[in-house]
Image (tube, rainbow, N blue to C red):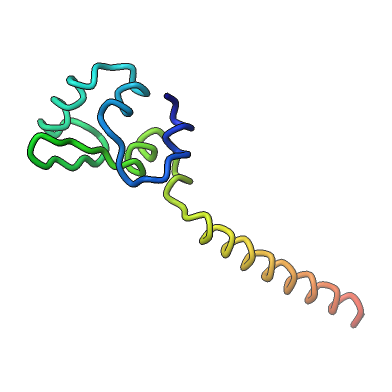
Length: 98
């Protein structure tokens, strides 16, 4: 299990076993840290069940793009392209006016 494998997952939560494989530690130790509030990422504890926020876990390891929605990023790219086209049109218009 790697960070890229976790990034490719679609769910919002991962198990301590999954996170522990990436962190190269015992899942029981990770659960102990979670229950004692000693982890740098978001966890959800419900009774005996511990879940780890996939986005928070990836963000802790520097995967900020994991928080981006693919559709939203495509919309951002389209908006940036429109701005570039407008800038180019203005530049071309200025050159033709001279």
